[in-house]
Length: 263
Length: 287
Image (cartoon, rainbow over the protein chains, first blue to last red):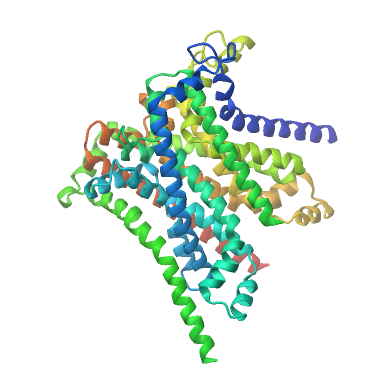
């Protein structure tokens, strides 16, 4: 009986390790491939070369797309942090029937099929004359990103000690002053990790971006999407590696913030 | 006394004002486009396009494929997510941290790039086929992309974190002392697991299945890159109607069907949860 039990647990941990490898390996595979000397994608890579990275740095297409992506992702992060923080501060102070419903409605963009939202914004924004513009893309991405900010700032607000706000008000500070001097510093980690998540959401988003951009305003994912469909070459692996490092930094940063908040 | 009530009232009004920008933004830039799509699906208030969808075998096959793919992926995700979440709750500090990094890092890397990675791994000359050939498992490359296998692998990889997190959240809430109590009463191991642990974790499984299934229904990038012509999902059909056929109204019909499917799935889950609570409450009352 004990032997069977032991064998069962060994099998269980092997299965879990296999799932972990399944999750992580494909994410990292493009990093070694990006250093290959061969003109085609090869694993294991042959030799060591940085020429695919140079190709990206020298390309105007990639440079323009990177600038567009940075602008859109930064603005998305700023707008969604403002909207999301105000909303969750408000919800944390109000008690009313149907509060859960309002909360749910604010989070619906998370479960709405992105392709449907893409078609909708494409149709509407074309009529309004803001399709193919960076502003239009920022607006559409903000809809997607705001729920993440609401979730992360709400978590911070839940952990915050409400008496600190009351103490501030009791000592004579106005509501606005209490917000800036007490509430804001306390929920800052939640806001920053919401901002990071909003940034990454926009930075990685491809479906809406393909519909709302033209060759002038296209972002990095749109360029990748076009190239992956045309041909596979190591440039894509290099682009992919750079983006993975960016994402890993984002993850690390938000993890550190959470830890700091818990302390 | 009066002034406190008044101040509270003022604070409440102020709080509502803070909520307004987000609500207004989502109403104009999120809800309105969705309603616009729905209205575009009824040109001249007629159902003629819906009739076309439900009487054309090609389109019906796409709808069926979408549901089939989503269901297969959901089942596989749940089967993999359950032991993974269990390991995260049961493993030591180091193991739990390692497992959550393995879970969250892919979560942060774009869906497009991960699909691209699978394209590299699964193509005829890819790493997976090379390993199989070397190990002598196969004598010629297996076809792992441009078919259901590729779509299933790619989508499972992307959706697995969404399946693990709700199950993990439910498992963490389970009081370990219940299992100890069961062991003291002479019911340890697998029996205690199936009698106590598993039923308590089921709400998490339901939430995970719901999330995975609804997200899977709307997939577009992954089936487009890893699937073949036979694996076309609704999302791809919508994109093709807009970019290739320029048929916005028919795309809108497909969008409406996708939205309806998502809403109905949530509705069913809501009813299931309500029924569950009701029956649990009844059982507790009976005891």
